[in-house]
Length: 248
Image 1 (cartoon, rainbow, N blue to C red):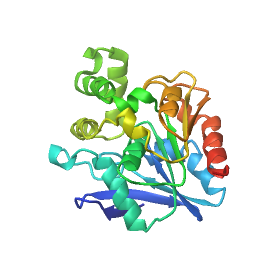
Image 2: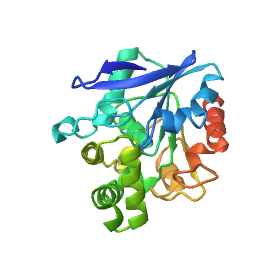
Image 3: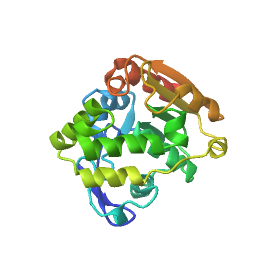
Image 4: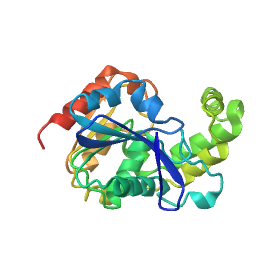
């Protein structure tokens, strides 16, 4: 585990696996690099192709800083952390992969000027990029209210995950508030080859096909599973590796 000082000095943790062409992998909300990329074997499969997997824990998650003050989470804070990591590592040519919150962060990076050679947006759809309020409200309700949330089972699961993973509820709420909508007209200017891949039962962030249609160089793909289970499916790792290997 390594750490670097981000744009505001907050220590952000990351790991490196393998050697070769760099691939930055951004995990989902309430998860970390270990849970989303290492345990399912995705990072190892990427490294086995002669690439270097770069595996940060997002702000508020894992071994990275988890401040509880709202001032530590300005709009696009997570994207700015990854821009700082790219600068810290001196990356000029790399690929970018994100799942769920990581996919939303990857999109915000590209909106802000990042230009990976390729990008994969996993567990993400059109509404999850263009209208973050609904998903933000769902998670905030679940974090605050648990079994009393509008969706009690989800609220109980989310509160249990926060407790089991040693996360701060205050930090998680702030992670939600730093998210920014990306308008459809802005998506039309993202000239990066993109794979939008989601589970066949995953509409949590809207339509993968709808998001791909809004991007000029994107295609959608479905793999087995829902929003929680698809990240563990061998088909997701295979899709990511095949896309990274394909000619542009």
